[in-house]
Length: 196
Image 1 (spheres, rainbow, N blue to C red):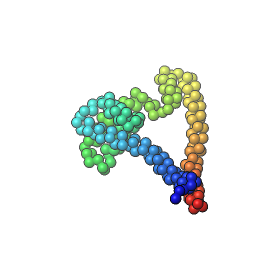
Image 2 (cartoon, helix red, strand yellow):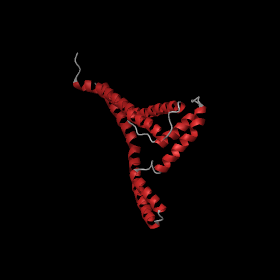
Image 3 (cartoon, one colour):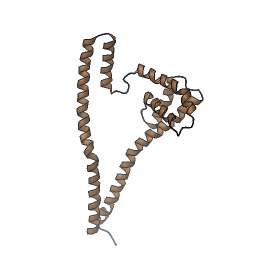
Image 4 (tube, rainbow, N blue to C red):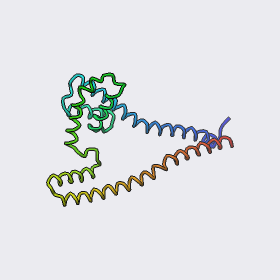
């Protein structure tokens, strides 16, 4: 007994859609779990190196961060990592509270140095450039140039805000439309099966 092409296609369509949906969900969740696993591994390495007194300065931490960044294909900021690491050590799951007491001041010192060296590190590049200019203008008491840079910063922020609003409107509708599309495809696939 042979099946017609339409019957085979109506059977395979829902199966293909199910596999596609599963693949997409696993693809998007993999990135998050990869980042989380890399962070977890980095925290364990930091704890181990702090316990053995291997870490003496910022460069020792940067070696670990750079290595994990390459391994997990993620970009980790030293300030964010160290702030999250302090929280990690403060949690109940971590039994060695004494480690936090011993290294807390060292970590805070490294964070402070990093914030002084790169005060606008978490800011996008265009805004960072303008903020650095404003900072220099204020140090050199060039108030007119600082005002011009502030106006430029206002324009950049306004432009980015428009882009974010548009992107938010688009992304707000994309997931419901995708889900509705999948549901209708499955329904019509089953209706096609029943009709046969």
